[in-house]
Amino acid sequence: MSKSYDWSYPVMSLLHKLQKADVQIISVNDGNEYEDVVGDSNLAIRKNAADMITAVDESWVRVKSKDAFATLYIVLGNDASEILADYSYTSGTKLEGILERVSSAFYEQWEDIPCPTIG
Picture 1 (cartoon, one colour):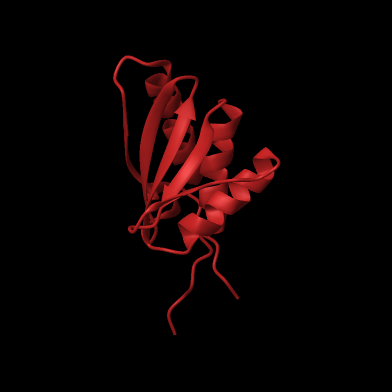
Picture 2 (cartoon, rainbow, N blue to C red):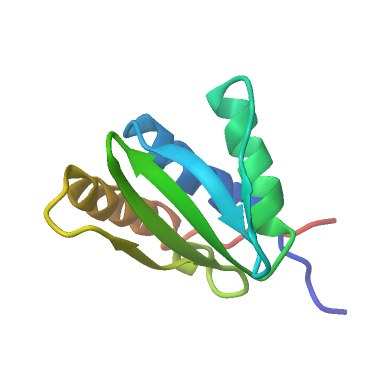
């Protein structure tokens, strides 16, 4: 029997790091269309985004910091530290540095931690 992984842990961790760096989670694309992420708190927004992200194998997450936008490409199925497969941003913005710091911290945190399993 193959293991089922609970991707919500590393996804929530990544989203939390972004929010702590004052990055807003705007929307998630599941391969069909972007859906706005809503909630009355950072935790609710994070949970709603994580639910959308973990419902599919690949998703694109639009984020914003001040007036700069970026898109994160999240792929579930590899090691937990590798879910953030890529990201794009406008070069020269403060968001560029934020994404580099957040992604490095995320990779380091999850590098030696296996993704939790379900059941």
